[in-house]
Image (cartoon, rainbow, N blue to C red; front, side, top):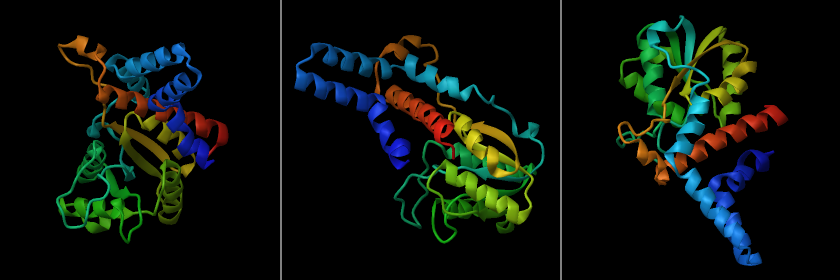
Amino acid sequence: MLFFNKLLPAFVLPIGVVTLLILLAGWKKWRWAAWLAAATLLASSTGVVGNALLRSLENAYPARSIASLPEADAVLVLGGVLSPGKATGLVTEWSEAVERFEAGVEIVQRGKARLVLFTGDPRGSEGSALQREAIERGVPRERTAVIGAVGNTADEAAQLKRYAQQHGLKRVVLVTSAWHLPRAMRLFQGAGVELTPFPVDYRALPNAGLPYLDWIPNAGALGKTETALRECYGIAFYAVFGH
């Protein structure tokens, strides 16, 4: 399962496909493989492709305001918010998904949820670091919790189910990146709570006023393509193998 879930995508994402095609072209002297590698790299590195793939995921759950949320027992902020490798006591280094944390804290502060939950080991993890950040921003400690160590989104769903059963949670707002929400909602369906999706961190943003730039290959667009494809592969994996 680890191979299919973690390792296989490395070979079927654009960079992996291009690498295999180049190796094949050099080994078999097949010119078509080299041309296909170039075409794959160029296409997957354009904003037209990257934005289209990401948008197909982000459009699954429309953006909404905090004011429109029904009141919930808790809001769960999915991980991936901090840059890895940061030593304790230094200035907080946020990842591109910082909006997950910002939204979770604001939802609690505006009275739409009683608790803000983070995932991780309470003794020291991203979750515990985020808990400290939330407290520093004025959220009372008793309205925060770190619900358990996780390795992936499926683990986060399992930890929420356990925590919800122990503390009687019925309705939870799920905060994560818009492009990650379709897979997350699928995995959290068995958590035993009523879920309210709250998408943030939209990345399918075309070049306003300069649409021709979306046709020029660049590393940022390639990252969008790989992010979207990885999510699609993850959805397919869990559809076949379950949680």
